[in-house]
Length: 187
Picture (cartoon, rainbow, N blue to C red):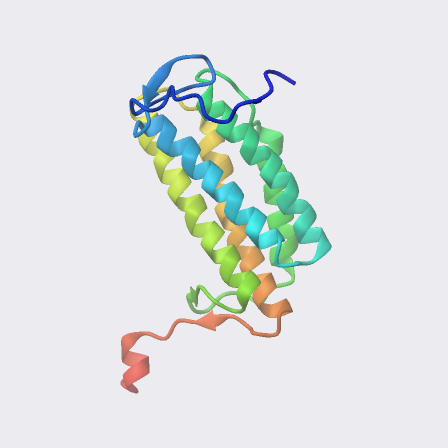
């Protein structure tokens, strides 16, 4: 392991800057810091989801995702590093396909809900989408590997499918969207 943090505060960020993994100092509101900060927020949301006591296989998958998100954040924090690779994305796709296989086809949009765990999963999914958008914004200014964006895109899909699985498993079922017209009884 690298340096140990024996003192949590350093006061070096009091001027509104932060240090990247390569030692470069940047503004705390830079696109790079926003991107890896949102990845960190996503990781925390996934930790909260796991804490709901979800099925062991889902918790195991999400714990592995947490490790990969830490790597992804590191990749964003250390310009030029490569920590997320095609096999990481392929693993997400295989897990997504396996979970989706047991679900009925979608005929309606799903509202975020379906119980506490499913709702938490939907929240993690929306944070993942924001992280993806922020990484895309960063890519307009700095080099970002395509695997980073693909990983987040596939992860948001996996979280959507997991939310469906959790809603059904909790007995709450999925909350289907009813259009304005259908709510009023028209058409």
